[in-house]
Image 1 (cartoon, helix red, strand yellow):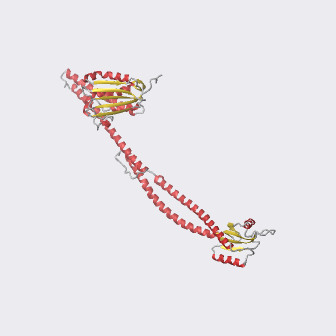
Image 2 (cartoon, one colour):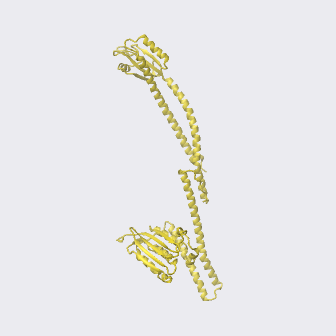
Image 3 (cartoon, helix red, strand yellow):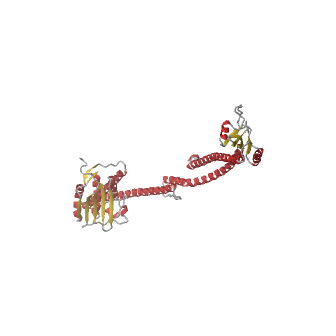
Length: 471
């Protein structure tokens, strides 16, 4: 049983929530940084504007009392602290006097002011014993620093604003986290639910329930996974049905000749046979059924080997046309017996690299079917054509043909178009299945075309080699 803490849903939930929290913290830190810096910059700009506005009313000379009163009035109305300074020591005009560190401006700042520049300050100011943001503008008369307008605001007020902002932010973040957790939990439940359904279905398939199908509710990767699982379950079910049908067919194919052998043998043993002629007839029937059993077992062994990875082919160069003629020589008696016409159009050039025994097995099966299912006075045409890189063997007959409904399945194991006739003729329904496997193992392909009551055409394409392959 899986641990809840190691489940996929918990891992996804933890990952998403962690990502949300980290994103929130990063956003908070970033907002704090920008809020503080942008606000401070705006304060500096406002302070400079205020001081410059006041400084515009200074027209040179000593700083008058009226100007000082004007600055004091402005200070009473403003949120910032504003004052004017004209004390030489306060203005660091102390040289050659002893340096006084309690002055409002340093020597460097005094020089900046003499150059007509604005001085901006941020940090702890000893004279005020507090952190401030300040702006200082010079009051200059004929290159002489007559005074300064000093305006500042305590940083504590900024800190209070930041605290207020942080409090509101935390409330918003808390609400956001609650909503995020609820939505994430709901989304993960929807995401993981079909995965759990697939897991349950997989357990049922492992227990042999192949009829189970998962309802595909989405068209994403999980939906594709569910669809693939359904296809897999169908394939396994179909394969199990084929295996079951295969075993049933094997049992049936074995049972039929065994029943004949047992019945005829028992008849001989029980003395039912009255004369030697009848006994010979029974013995021939027993021999025929024994041959069917031998052939069926051979076909089954071939299929078993072909399905295994250990099956190997002993490939050698084969002059294909001559090889076909040698195989066809064995069919002369049956062709004469059934009065079948045979036309050969064999290109002598193709040389294939194949296993002689297996190539002969392929040809025998195809030729057997053509001869077997072509009625007396029928016609068989065998053509061999050379193509670039391969050759094509075409066997055409004027036999009964194959119904269109049966044609897609004729190379399936134990499939028969006419079961009664196949048993009478001794076929097992495995021949074409073996042929297809053998052709594919030799890098070829086989196709069958047929029309009922017209005939059948079998095409086998195999790769060729150059004539100087062994040189």
